[in-house]
Length: 49
Image (cartoon, rainbow, N blue to C red; front, side):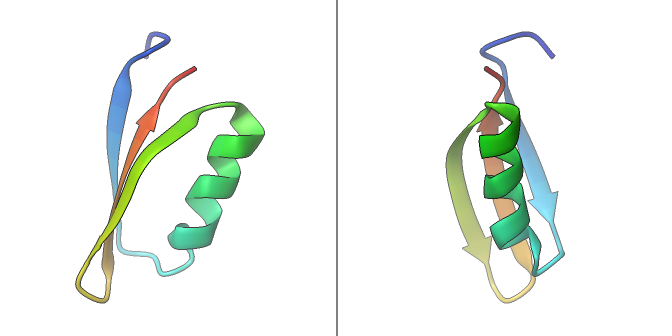
Protein backbone atom coordinates (compact mmCIF):
# COMPACT_ATOMS: atom_id res chain seq x y z
CA UNK A 1 0.00 0.00 0.00
CA UNK A 2 1.07 3.56 -0.62
CA UNK A 3 1.02 6.28 2.00
CA UNK A 4 -2.44 7.84 2.27
CA UNK A 5 -4.32 4.80 0.97
CA UNK A 6 -7.21 3.41 3.04
CA UNK A 7 -7.90 -0.25 3.71
CA UNK A 8 -11.07 -1.81 5.09
CA UNK A 9 -10.46 -4.61 7.59
CA UNK A 10 -13.38 -6.88 8.51
CA UNK A 11 -12.91 -8.80 11.75
CA UNK A 12 -14.86 -11.57 13.43
CA UNK A 13 -12.57 -11.49 16.48
CA UNK A 14 -13.95 -9.80 19.60
CA UNK A 15 -10.43 -8.84 20.68
CA UNK A 16 -9.91 -6.79 17.52
CA UNK A 17 -11.87 -3.90 19.04
CA UNK A 18 -8.90 -3.30 21.33
CA UNK A 19 -6.11 -4.83 19.23
CA UNK A 20 -6.58 -2.99 15.93
CA UNK A 21 -6.59 0.56 17.41
CA UNK A 22 -3.50 -0.32 19.48
CA UNK A 23 -1.75 -1.70 16.39
CA UNK A 24 -2.58 1.49 14.45
CA UNK A 25 -1.05 3.63 17.21
CA UNK A 26 2.08 1.49 17.42
CA UNK A 27 2.58 1.46 13.64
CA UNK A 28 1.75 5.15 13.16
CA UNK A 29 -1.35 4.59 11.02
CA UNK A 30 -4.65 6.44 11.39
CA UNK A 31 -7.81 4.58 12.38
CA UNK A 32 -10.50 6.49 10.50
CA UNK A 33 -13.61 4.50 11.39
CA UNK A 34 -14.48 1.55 13.58
CA UNK A 35 -18.06 0.29 13.48
CA UNK A 36 -19.65 -2.85 14.82
CA UNK A 37 -22.22 -4.84 12.86
CA UNK A 38 -24.07 -7.03 15.29
CA UNK A 39 -22.21 -9.00 17.93
CA UNK A 40 -19.36 -10.51 15.93
CA UNK A 41 -18.44 -8.30 12.97
CA UNK A 42 -16.35 -5.14 13.28
CA UNK A 43 -15.26 -3.01 10.33
CA UNK A 44 -12.14 -0.86 10.51
CA UNK A 45 -11.02 1.75 7.99
CA UNK A 46 -7.31 2.40 8.37
CA UNK A 47 -5.26 5.05 6.57
CA UNK A 48 -1.63 4.21 5.94
CA UNK A 49 0.61 7.02 7.15
